[in-house]
Structures are given as C-alpha cells and as structure tokens.
Length: 184
Image (cartoon, rainbow, N blue to C red):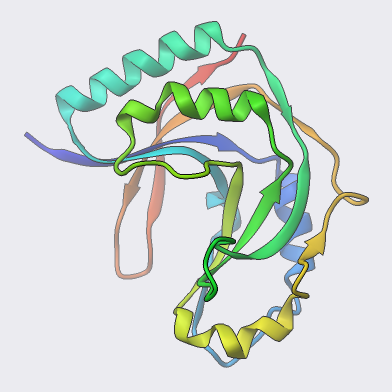
C-alpha cells in the first residue's frame, strides 16, 4: 500500500501572494534561505502526515462532508512576521491573518486527522524557511512587530478547500492538489 504525505489547505489569492513577494523583495541575505514558490503559498488547515490509500479515502470523505456543511467565510491578512510566534528563536517567515472563528471551526473538524496534536491553530502561510541558527543575522530584515498588511491587503473569501499531497525532493517540496471541495 502506498503512502501519501497529505495536508488540507486553503488557496490564497494571487494578488496577496504578489503583495507578499513585493514586501519581501528586500529580504536578501548571504544566509541560506528557502523561499516558498509563489504558486505553492497556501494556508494549511491541518497536516495529516503520511497516509495509506484507505486513510486518504477517509480524509476525502470527511472533506467532502465538511465542505457541504461549511459556509464560505472571509480571511483578513494581518502581517508578515518571523515565526513560530511562541518560540524565542525563529525559523520561518509567515504571512498571518486575523483570528477567524470560521477557520478555527474548520480546523477543528479535521483535528482527528492531524499528524500531531495541534496547538494554537490559526491561519498563516509560510513564505520563507531558514535554519534557526541564522535568525540573529536575519532579524534586522523585518521589524520585530512585523510588516502590517492591514492598510494594503483586503479580506478574501474562502470558497473551497483542497486535499494536497506534498512530494519531497532535494529542491524542496512540490505540492499537488488531489481533490478540491467547494464550500456552501
């Protein structure tokens, strides 16, 4: 039985991806970093981990049922920050969104499929990854309070969820949409 590295995600509008890329144009350094390809930027609802075909079918069934009972909702961009926020030493740059009860409820519906216990789930997208040892050299590139998007980015409508597969390679992960389910 084959294994699939699966997560459930929300698309981000292209204009928001481009705005994030523009705001990070000065994020240049001689420290090794991995920027997420623009087409791969997404908000993970839940990371399921390595699933066999039967487990993947269960996730697909739950995603379809959940989408058919979940209303479309809005997410509002908040800022670009070093992350994770609960750690002293950072290893990523995130695009963050304002708290959303709808997102939290959606995440909760998939929590039984989570690879590990979800803690403080909130909507965000990873824009850059780096070794935490380089944080001290990078932290001058983004203000401590982050880059606010509140005056530049508009809320967007979450209208569907995707079941995605992460295929790991030397060049970094490649993402493939396996199924898409529209919200009501």
